Image 1: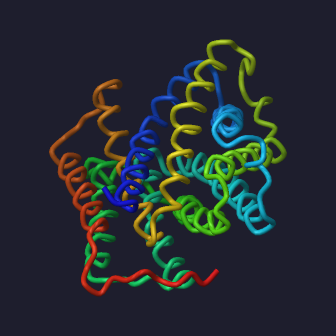
Image 2: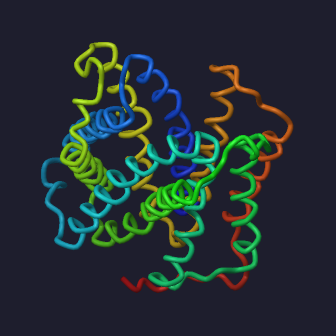
Length: 304
C-alpha cells in the first residue's frame, strides 16, 4: 500500500470519527450544555489528550516548532476551530440542522479554489465531476430531499457559507503547517489549544451552561474530546502530510455526513429514506472519483 493511499485512509477514518459529533452534541445538550460550552469542552479535552499523546510518542521536543508552523497553527486554531465552531452553531440556529449541514459542505469548493491559487493544483475532469456530485450527495443525505421545510434568510445563508469556508481552510492551513515536517500530533495539539483559548475569550462558554461542572457532562465532554477530536485530528494531520492534492481532503472527509446519517437512523430513529440512501451513494462515489488519478496529474509545486 503506497503512502498516499494510507493517507487517504486516515482522512476517511477521520471523517468516520467526525460523523459521531452529532451524537456527542445531543448527549451533552441533554445534560444542559450550550453549543459554545460543548465546543469548548471538546477542544479543551482534545488538546489535553493530544498533548499527552505527543509527549508519549514524540517527546517534549516535538512542541518546539518553527515560526511559520506556529503562525499556521494559530490560524488553524482561531479560524478553523474557534470561528468555525461559532459560525456553525449560529448556522444551526438560523438555518436548522439539515440546511446547516448542506452549507457546511460547500467546503470542498473553497478548498479547491484555494489549492488552485496557493498550490497550483490541477482541476482535472474527474474533479469537475466529483465536486458537484459531492455537494448534491451531501445535500440529499442531510435533508432527505426536503428543502421546503427551511426558510433560508440571506444572513443565515452567509453564516452557513462562512462555516463552510472556515472548515474548508482546515486542509489549506494544515498543509502549510506541515511544511516544516513538524510532528502531526504537536500541530494537532496547537490547533485545538488556540481554538479553545479563542472560544474562552470570545464567549466565556462556562457561563452559558446550566451546570458546567456536572460529572456526567464532563464525562461526555471527555469522550467527545477523545474520540471525535483528539484521535480524529491526530489521524487528520498525519494523513494530510502524505497527500499531494489538498483539494481532495474535504471530499474524502465528507464520509462524515454518511456516518452521521447512519447514526441518526440507528440511535435516534431518524428517517433513512431512499433519497438519503441515494445521497450516501453519491458521496461515496465522489470520494472514489477524487481518489483516482488521471494521466495528466502530476505533483504540483508548493507556492506558499
